[in-house]
Image 1: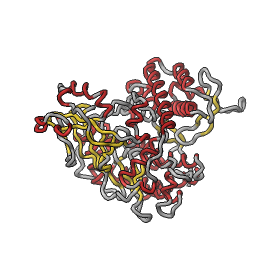
Image 2: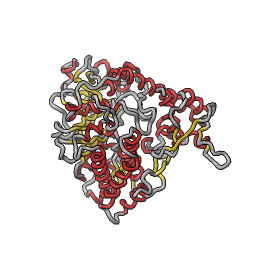
Image 3: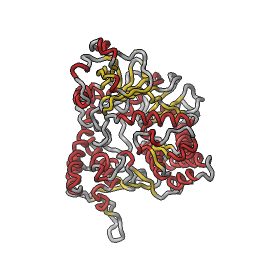
Image 4: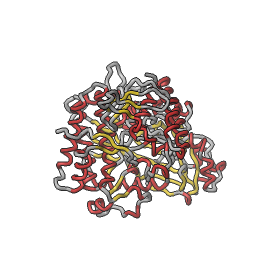
Amino acid sequence: MTAEQDLAAGILDALLRENFGNLADLVQRPSPADPGGPFLHLPGHPPLPLEPDGFLTDLKLQRPADLTLADVDAALQKLADPADEDGVRAFAEECRQALATRQLRDREARPPSRRPAHWLGAGGQLAYDTLAARQPHPAYPTAAARLDFTDADALAYAPEHRPAFALHWVAVPREKLTRAGTLPPWWPRPSDVGLPPALDGEHDLLPVHPLTARRALAPALADLGLPAARLTAPGTHLKVTPTLSTRTVAVQREPALHLKLPLPTSTLGRLNRRSIVPGTLADGALVQSVVAAAAVPRLLLADESHYAHAGHPFLGYLLRRFPDDLDRCRIVPLAALLAPAPGPAPALVIEDLAHMHGDGTLIGLFRDYLFLLFGVAVHLFVRYGIALESHQQNAALVIGPDEDAPLRLLVKDLGGALLHHDRLTRALPGAPPATAFADPRLLTGSDDALADVFTTITLHLGAGALAFGLAAQGRAPLPDLLDLIRAALTQALARYPGHPAAAVLRARVLDADRLPGKAMLTAGTLQTKARSGARDINKFYGTTGPNYLKGRP
């Protein structure tokens, strides 16, 4: 099957799961009168055979599937509401961008220069990020797309190619800046980057990604009435390497320091802009302080309390600091666990890691990881009313520094969490008031809303995707892996007998007939927020799938 056929099949799987354009109505299911099927009768295409899925959806296309992106375009144009015409056209572009990125990645892929034995600490994590960036997203088939990126942009700035580049800088009057935290001693002054020394007294520098410098910096400065020609540094300064998120870069001289920078692109949908809304910086710092106060054992948090912005989505940054004392540990993003590990043996990263932990087996590592994952997530949910958006990019497994050390979970990008504010303030009397948060979407009074985040992030992406992925690659039987998930979640809930929030999780996850999923293509690209009704496109639950844990002992 070609890369285009594989991508087209994955797109149709997602469209069927989300039932965009009532696509599910075109499924022919077996019946006594007509035992054939199930088939998908795609407009303008011969019937496509379907097979059971079991993860996020009931049915998926059988592979290989004789499909092209043009087939997807034609079907969407016939099925979509005319009000979604712009979204359908944008999605066609997104599909082709994803295909071009995948093809470039396949042509240009180069293994990290050092072997896994040396991938330690924050510097070693960058090698794992490179592997993770080449992996498909478990739920979003066009995740490889970075809108408006050219091939040259990808080679110069995308993590799968592991480039290094220098940042641009712009001086901003201090009275226009909102700043929190402290800067490292090497942070440049305007005169250090070729600007007039007279600016040193009343201006501070903001780092700027090269793409933003080229495409968005001058308009951003003009929006604030600032002269681009006088304030933009003539050269570059500070070498960095992109992390898995692309817009976040690691400082080469100090890889435990990351700079999250706005980028003029979209990922995971055209509406998922990679600029930085200024209020999210303070919100992320608030959430970090709340989760840190909860003091959950074996949960590590990146420090996200250092940031600055000029009140504009393209003029700001977050300076993220990783915890100390991880230099002899492996920091592995969850997105890298199913990636092929470099080396002569055909092993996955998770299999490679298993040799370094506990009993040395894949099942042993997976079991210990699940008990860690659900122990942390259930404790935060039940005790404090916190559901972290700790998906495969935002969460990393920390192994070491020796074989007997317990696993730890490192979480970053905390601004996407959901907080049950009433329960939080009861558990943490010093918690910030609701009015302290710039984005009201971070707060809820509903355990059902929290359970949706827990299910779609912690369960689906943190556990289910790994189990189904390992089984698909023949590493372990799926029933055994699902048994481990249910056992770990059951044990985590058993620590809170009689607690109403634990009862909600048990009912919504372990005992539910179906589990919620996200309608990511619909909310992210195909429809506007007004059409989809999504308050937050990253928390839009427009679909359900079978409960792959239901009925297991």
